[in-house]
Image (tube, rainbow, N blue to C red):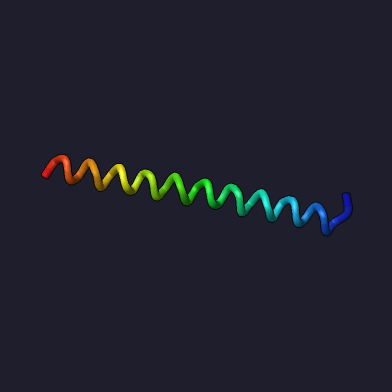
Amino acid sequence: MNFGQTFHFLFGMDVFLLSVVVKQKQHMKESEENNLSDLI
């Protein structure tokens, strides 16, 4: 595996992890908003 392939692989992993984190944060935000509307 040369440097270019290694960089591409790591970059792809970072993008994948970032998208997972963003989805989880959006989901948490939605459930928080739902809880707030339930309280009101």
